[in-house]
Image 1 (cartoon, rainbow, N blue to C red):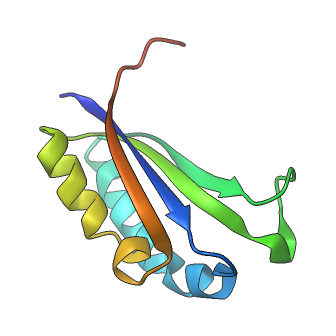
Image 2: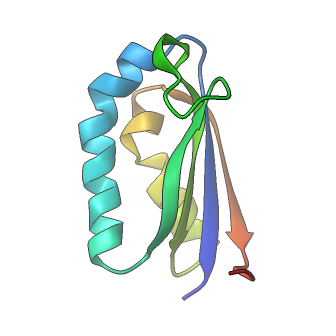
Length: 100
């Protein structure tokens, strides 16, 4: 199954909203993980620190298997971070895993 990178960009000052929606977002991620389709996922800290504190996050990256680009775009459009307006932009691109 092909891989796709989903890159979401957070709106400014959205940390409180992000944290409120996070359980629903993680529940969807668990489904991908349990299906063996999730390669990696995580947020982009807004500052150069593993725990950015109140600076929050600037977005997220998800790399997962989907049947095709349309299916990946559909999945991304239904993510709670998208539907709740935390992501101001979502880019979905085919991804080719080379290393490691």
